[in-house]
Image 1 (cartoon, rainbow, N blue to C red):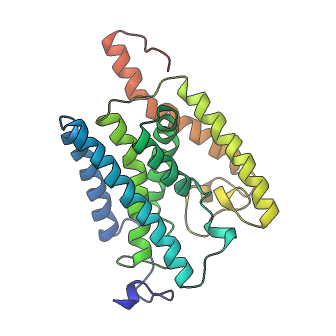
Image 2: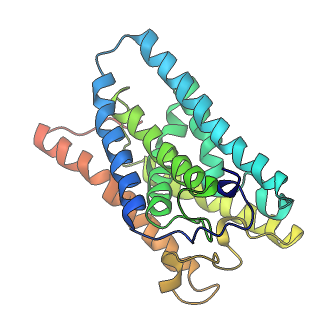
Length: 244
């Protein structure tokens, strides 16, 4: 059992789209599809579900911090909750507990897109399944992606066209602030100073800092794609959505 929490894991690195990875992706998809079953549940049941979901998501995040401290690798340069995924553990928790719409629109576009990419290319490094780090990474991103989908599917929330420029502005302001902190303390949160060590989409976008602009464009395109279902829905209903 100890080897599944070991710092020097010898069980093999994470295998992208290997059988275990594909099985977990299928499990996440099944969970997302099952969310529709909650639509007719009572408000009390939904509230308890949101609380339980938040507790599990936060405990999963804290377990990562505890493990990094246990193996002696917790540092302010790497472990502050400033990467998008850590930020969305916090934001999604607030969203689920308060049903805040402004957080929802950020989570719908940035949280869904970021977590989806991280699920497909997890930053687990040498820690392949069934190591704790691999499971923790997949669970974290699966829950981050599913939270705004829950709010959409079960609570009836939806984004609007005006959500996209707002989210784009928030993201860029945050990136500027984080870059300043990176320069100050020698960190690389949001990967604004160099690419991650593991394989990612950034590998195809050129060297630093040139990959940052394509990332912005890709992010904007993904936001538009995520909004397309509502374009089609409103077109079929022959209505213009009210601005939120």
